Length: 385
Image (cartoon, rainbow, N blue to C red; front, side):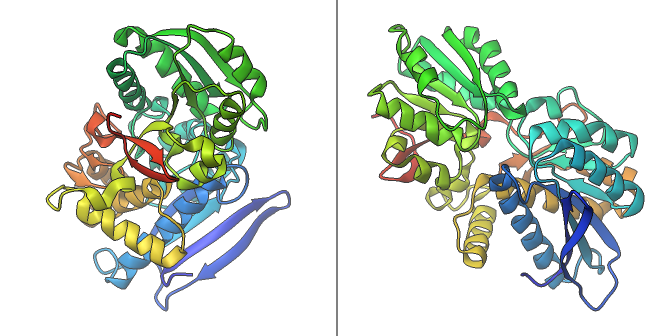
């Protein structure tokens, strides 16, 4: 484990289990809470998030802390459960008296916790993607992942370029899938794209061949958009290949982890998806405002954890650094921390360059996304073929 001050707390049926503790010699003065799905079906999100947040805290503490005081990161493992997330949020606010909470990992958990943060007047910086987390704006709630609507617009703009006019949408029945489906259905007419089918499936499904057959049976369909998280992203790609259906497959920004491409194998080749610039950090010009931070994060994470950095870990890394910047300028009063987060402008992060405002608690624009594809098992920038 990294040096630094943090606690990792796991939820279980019997209550709470203290899984790991590492303490510095001085007492922690600044407590930051975190709720991540470190275990369970969403651990592909929560694992990198917890590791990234711990890494950021360790670096801050090595460099002297915030205003000379060490940071204690209290990580609670919700295992993806909204009920556990709510319980943990209350504990962090009422018992631990944290200055802010980062996470949860999933959209469903974030929506469940949103009111807790508002009522407790404690900053929550969600690491989940659904736009409804910050729309409408809640005073104490922010998020670091790019907006679903930006991803949908990027996908539709590429379809327009390819003269694709009729598509099918497949989406998981979790919070992320439902939010994405809503954006796709709402924005398609703006791009003169018709949804011939818009289907929802069980996010835990292990075979989507029946859905693929249903979509393939409609000869008007020129492309498919799948909006989900693992394992369905790989499964639908495999099922389309098995059916010898060669229409373009577009995925959401949830595809931005190379493990999903690896899980799909050869079927991943040619998948098109929007994602943040972390995946192509090396190819950015040196003067790009994100380049230095992206390379720092990527190099440190991959050296420390022996796995490729993903956008998901970056969400938590950005959230932790935002809290640190706010506390550095405003102190530990929760209301002042909120004001300081909302006041962040031109703040470079893994997900983009953030500028929050009272009307915008995501702080990113559509240029925080680039279109990517899979070629020879690697993610590369998508370019006209």
